[in-house]
Image (cartoon, rainbow, N blue to C red; front, side, top):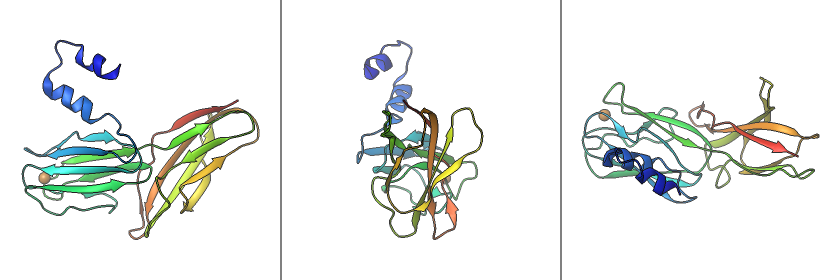
Length: 196
Ligand SMILES: [Cu+2]
């Protein structure tokens, strides 16, 4: 039990426990809260959420949450909250435009299911097909090789069947483009999956 193991260590303080709980991946369509301030920091600074999660920044001091690739911008806010739904895979770094060095990131993993012989892997890189100004890149490589190959480039669909000839272990990653700004998110964490 995850909760039980978090509670078990006697020395674990309440703040550390809350931080650990806050970074646990949410269910699809769920919520995740990030506290902005007090002080020049986001808590948690780095968090992983499922595709389609609404992330809400709550302000305790005058800051911004501003996506490095233009996916969102709260502009200056001193209280209240700023919600943003993140439908698709990637790593989304953000910062405060007022305070240099005040940084955070949100990671949205690719989802991979399947893997039995001949049926391939079903990849889902977004909770929904691309809205205006968005597109997706998906890449793969055989485990043990170094070069990534494109599976999808500037796709608008949310899913695809990855069915290479031959068994083996494949690595997969995806990212989201902000085509309005000509910028891309970072890549989602690499997922390794065996096709038997
Ligand atoms: Cu700030």
